[in-house]
Amino acid sequence: MIRSISTALATSLFALTALPAFAQDANLCGGVGENGQWLGGDEASSDISSSPTYIEQMALVLMRNEYVGLFTVSEPGDYRIEAQGRGGGDTVLDVRNAAGEIVASDDDSGGDAASRAETFLTAGTYCASMRSFDGSPITGFVRASRMDQEALTAGVAIQDDNSVSGECDLSVAQPITLGEPIANNWSVQNVYSLRLDGQTPVSITAENPDADPILTLFDPSGNWLAENDDFDGLNSRIDMAEPLPAGEYCIAVNLYGNENVPITVTAKEYDAQEVLMNLYDRGDASPPLDGSHPVKALGALQTRLREDVNVGSNATWYTFDVSEGGLILVEAIAQGNGDPVLVMYDDLGRQVGYNDDAGGSLDSLLTVRVQPGTYLVAVRQLDSQTQGFIRLLFERYVPARP
Image 1: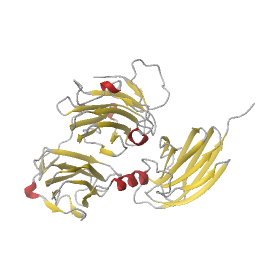
Image 2 (image 1 turned 30 degrees about the vertical axis):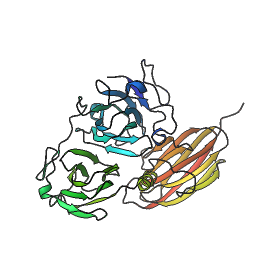
Image 3 (image 1 turned 90 degrees about the vertical axis):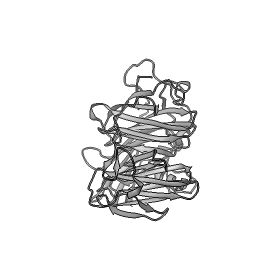
């Protein structure tokens, strides 16, 4: 077990000893893992398949940032990844494989606003990202372990008429078919069955923000496979990229919100390209600059540039070029109703800036120190139901010369 404090900033705020080693691969986990820290202290000690006990780090995450912990799996199996904030902090946890695909995501399944993901992982390297739900600073622990090792969080068991203590009763399940959505009030129906005739990778979603649904998937023997809450806003999604064997699977839906509004449940074949497009649309990863995803090129940013865009919850992307080091300011101002979100990446896919609310308003502001190169900026509405005009301002400042 490793207990040491780390920070989500590139520069430490205070002196610490025995800090874990950083990763060096710019492409690890789709770029997310480049500045990640090994949960076991170094790569050799971060294999949770063979570790004699759980591995964890304590992290200080500053405003609109995230901590990324790295671990490896040498033997495929079921594992538990958790994040817990101190002082009631509300954590959000994403687990990505080496290619950058999210294999597990959770908000509150650890109980008391903590995050907990229990999922099957194949051999490889993984990145566990912890951030706060509202973007405020947070101090918390990230832990990776086998299922037989001590848990960090208490966990939340599903409790309803059809699903008790994490079990799923197929006798009361409504059958669903791949590609055919079903909508029911939770109070009427909250257990579903999915029959697969052959090995199939699947994606399952539960949608209605007013219900704030939680998804849990069980295999044909009743074993827990995966759980998710708040993948896209308050909607939930489980992606099983590894093909599931043939059989009848059970899907349990729980909720935090209104039990008398319809929750749309959809199961479909997993599409890796769709997963990537969703990441780009949410601004969670930057698209390639090869024309496969729409990105508007603004060219060289000289001093000041203004751009108006009508945008919804799917991000609109821009690129601009910087010829020398300096400071970039990007501002998003709602024209009427709206709550814009800004995110900025360098051309290697590393996030260099994120902001939602600035200056006590719903508008957003980024101030980023840059080096010569190409940068990408995404803007979207925070609320999935909002569509409206956003005015963007790009300003470039250069260091004063003697």
